[in-house]
Image (cartoon, rainbow, N blue to C red):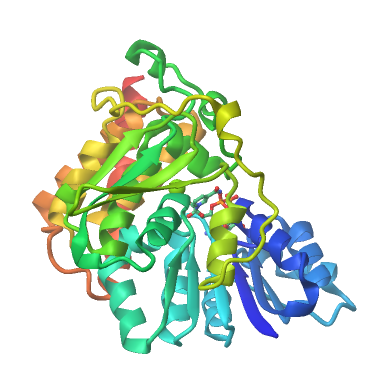
Length: 392
Ligand code: NAD
Ligand code: MG
């Protein structure tokens, strides 16, 4: 029996992971499940899967969690330290699906103990790519990408010579605002931004898809995971979300990965790797799809990709600063304190200020450095948000 843990079990990726595991109950022993405010959902999953421990990120909800688990035999715990300790518990396979920089510590602790990490939390690589990869290498741990584009690249690379890779192309749906003129983007609401045309995902990544900040994070994720130079990594808009990524080789061939927009594919591939097992995803009917189209992203309406290029050029702590500023800007947009287009403005202001103040290019070799810059970037972003909010 394989032992598994799921960080972010109450989220969209967490739920899809549970869906796959619950289909083969005899095959898995569940160690840890973690969640946030949704105590009922966390407790229900922990009971159904007979988890060893359930952890909520919020210490104020520990009593509620204990009550919800009464008589089940599932241990209850709370707070970031308890989440980190849950990652230390031995498990053969661990899903990292917390949203945001909060996913970094459990990702790191999992690979530090040599565990196999299924990585949905792209922020781990954006904030601390070199540290995460080096920690995994030192401990002999494997990291399996779960972002759909990165799983697609990983699959296209299977059996290939890494030295023959010329470029990697990841696709972006373009989100709900792909055709919107810039004047209209300025007035976009969180409700409009969350309505993704193809994928059903958590609120935060859905809005990041609308601004292309999700694709910006994914360019950096590609650079850190596959180790390719930034100029060899491209993003192309593909509104149908059927081709997830392509790998270009030195002979000019492009290997594409196609599939329906269903995260259970990438999750299942990581769960069963290196085997392929049957998955409950829709099979594509290409004739019914009819047409797959591609277009260049618009750098004026969607500045996030340009900011990602700057971050990749600087590396060091720039990724952690970029992500933290983006998280604060996203919160401010959700709270209607700033407009949709202001998010990129806030992030750019923070990157400019921090590179002047601290020199972001110093190596992000320690978790301490990463957390310090994350903290500082959040403060600077809050200031930039206050300025923008005052101008509205
Ligand atoms: P979600 O919002 O649906 O779920 C997030 C999970 O993280 C929940 O369990 C929540 O309780 C937990 N969480 C939130 N804040 C936390 C904190 N501070 N500490 C501990 N736990 C916390 O998010 P999602 O859409 O499932 O995305 C999860 C991760 O996977 C993100 O990094 C996202 O970018 C990535 N991802 C998601 C998809 C998708 O289709 N949803 C695709 C690719 C990558
Ligand atoms: Mg993705």
